[in-house]
Structure formats: C-alpha cells, structure tokens
Image (cartoon, rainbow, N blue to C red):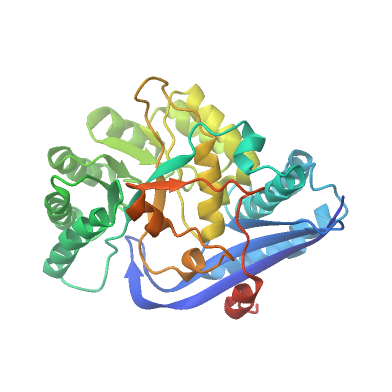
Length: 389
C-alpha cells in the first residue's frame, strides 16, 4: 500500500453570533481536515488545530511541504513517516504550525491503520479501559456587553449546561481580575447543588493576578484553573500550583514530547491538557501521555474542532489507563464546546450526537467501535463549506 495524495480541507462558516475569550473575538468557525488517500482505496481522515488564517497557512504546509515528503510511502509506517517529516522540518520549527500540520496527517495515518486492521483506534493502542466517557460542557464565552450582563448570562448558562446532562461545565474569563471574580461567583451560584465548574483564563493573567483570582476560586469550589498564565511562564505555573489549593491545568499550547518533558519536570500542573491535533498527532500524543503518567500527572485532553477531533479524542480517552488505579479512579473527561458548531454536529455521515448521548446517558458518551476513528466525514458537506485558498 502506498500514499497517493495528502489533501487539506479548510472549512469555514459565519457564526450566528460573535464569540470571544480573553485574547480576541471571532465571527467565523473554522475546521481543518486532512485526507490521506492510498492506492488501495483506503482513505484516512485527520484534523489540524488552528483557526482562520492559521488553518489556511497550515494547508500550505500539509500540501506543499508534507505531501511531497510522504508520497509513495507505506501509510502503515506511520512512526517512520512521523520522524522523517519532523526531522526534515526541525530547522523550520519544532513547535507551532509545522507540528499542527503534522498532527492532522498523523491522525489520518492512524485512521488508515485501523481501517486496514478492521479495528477501532483504541484496539490498536491496546484496548478500551472504558467504553463510555463522561463529558463536560464549556460555554460562557465573552461578548461585547457590560459586566452586569455577563454576570446574569454566565449564571444562567452554567445552570443550563448542567441541565443538559453534562457532568461539569467550564467558563471563560478575561475581563480583568476583579471583574472575573464576580463572574466566577455567579457561575458558582449557578451550578450549586448541580455539579462542578472549571475556569479557563486562556493565559490572560500575570502570576500575581492569577493568585488573586485563584484564591477566590478556592472559596468558590472551582475544580480547576486552566491556563492562568502564559505557557512560557513555567516558574509561574510552579508557584501557582504550590500556592493554591485549586487544581492548575494547562498544556494545550505545548508541542511534542520534548516540550512536554519540560512542563512535567517543572511540576507546575495538577492536570495535563494535551491537544492531539496540535502537539504532533496520535503518535506523539501517546508518548506525551506516557510522560505525563510517568510523572503521576492525570490527563484530561484538550478538545477543540470538528467531529473528527471529537472522535479521535473519544478513542484516546477510551485507551487511557486510570491514574492512579483503584476502585474509584480519576476518570478523564471529554471536553465539549456547547456553542454553535456545524463542523461538529453535521460533518459526519453518521453524527455522533454528543448532546443527545449526554442527555440520555447520564452525562456519558459512547466510544465509536467501527474501524479507525470510527467516523466518516460527508464529502458533500465538505464541498459545501470548503474555502478556496
């Protein structure tokens, strides 16, 4: 079997309303799919992390840089391919967009391997530690509105997400430390007696401001405080973890086993959040997972993107060993974006229907058991939303 084509599909549509987080507002939803074709008619699908123009730039890396390197290669030699591409791109970036582009390609190769073997991805990895995964819903995005409007909306939305059946919910912050504490207080009240909540800062604080917000989160009972400071600030993470009782989480902006080694050796995270569509794909994710567990750090994958990313993460969460083991072990959760996303809800020939599963399954989602990722994108849907670039 040989690789005959590596195609990049960037999909976009205008959202019904503008959404924001601590770094910027956005009006369009983007997904970047990678399709790897073979001479035996087996096709694999993957996804690259990165919105908007980042996805368009990554399309060039996938098709103009990676594709010529792998044409004619055996897609089953995915680890050989991974290291060949990484080594040849090393001079041009050991992190960031080259790794995002490699991630989508690698995921597609694993999809091919599962289809050739007739096995779901979790079987290729070593089996399912669980056949269903608890899900948490995030929402409560920032908008161009007053603090009072944010407070009222966040409290109601937090309660609404838990009423959908999700086991927990996650909010955004980024209006300012004092304003954010008021938002968190409203969310804590909204989830009281229903479930737990987490807070995602998307790296908007200095260490001192993160301590100010983190101490309030201790009082409000937040489960974790995500990306409180810049990913480069390893010392800040270590200080926050040592000085706060709330769990410190992060890592979505880190790449490869070498970047993750520094994070884990620094001991600044209570919970690691690798992003498989960015850090180097499934091949590298498995190495990062092994590193995290070697440092006794639980993993809850970061999930952002289309149904391809969701399906990939369901397979990985199924195959993840409990850490630590026991009668009632720590269970990884599926992150689910509750905002408008056609690329998650309508992309597949057979939709995952995450929200329906959550509602009927007590907050749990079943792991696809068909070969490879267990899902298949709808080609007509892709043609409808693909942008020319």
